[in-house]
Structure formats: structure tokens, C-alpha cells
Amino acid sequence: MVRKVITKAKRVYHRGRSFLGRSNMFNINNPYIIGGITGAAKNVINGQPPINIEGIQSRITQPNAKNPLIPLALGIMFHNTALKAIGTYLIVDPPIEEENDDLTQEEIDEIADMIIDEDEDEDEDEEENNEQQVYIHK
Image (cartoon, rainbow, N blue to C red; front, side):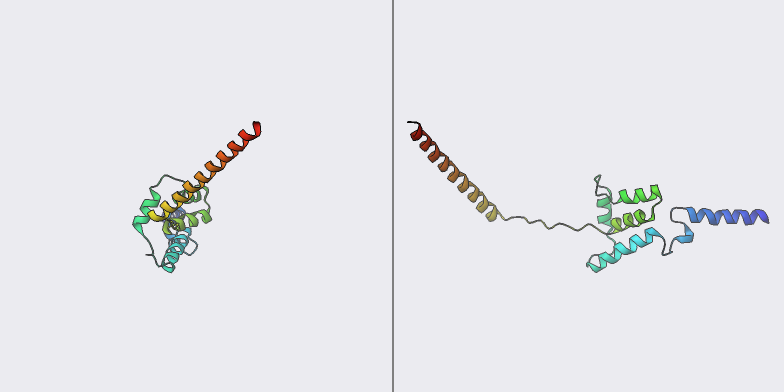
């Protein structure tokens, strides 16, 4: 009888200590749940799907410093609940896409013409300065 109680206590203890332990899986203090729900809520507010699996896969597989698994791994490694929640939030919530101010071909041509005109004006000024220098030395 005592042995059953001890094994049951050990099971409960180990479940609570596991990665997503059963005892705190849906508890509000679980940082994974907090981060995931917060990211999904922000996506819904911004008019995006709550969880975009394809977007998550593309962000996680990129080997760069913006990989959202980095704060999650640091949180797990250092047992820091705040980093775990931030990492989960970054995984669910996509980063803000920067608007590309792509120029049309006409705008590019106008800018190129302005640069060429400035270069021609500078060349003419240099020629005038050279002529003046020649006259000064005579």
C-alpha cells in the first residue's frame, strides 16, 4: 500500500516537472500557453489568421538571428518563464513586414537623369576652374 502511494506521488511530481506537464498544461501560469494565446490574439486583431503554420515553418527554418526559437531555447535552458513566453509569442506572431518602397521604372529613369545632369554640371565647373587656373599662371 505504501509503495503504491509513493509511486503515485512520484508520477505526479514528474508530470509537473516535465516540459509541458499535465498538471500545468492549461494553467494560466504556463508560459507556453500565455505566449501562444497572446500571439494568436494579436494576429486576430490585425486581421490575420490566428496561427499560420506555413509562416511559422518558414521563420523557424531560417538560420539567422531573427529565428524565434532562440529566445524559446534560452528560456528553456535558463528556466526563465519570461523568455519562454516571449519565444512562444514570437513563434506564433509573425514579424511586421516592412513596406518595400519599390520604385517604378519611370521614377528610376528620372533619378538617373538627375544624377547624370549633376555630374555634367560638376564637370563643366571643373573645366572652368581649370581654365581660370591656367590664366592665373600665365
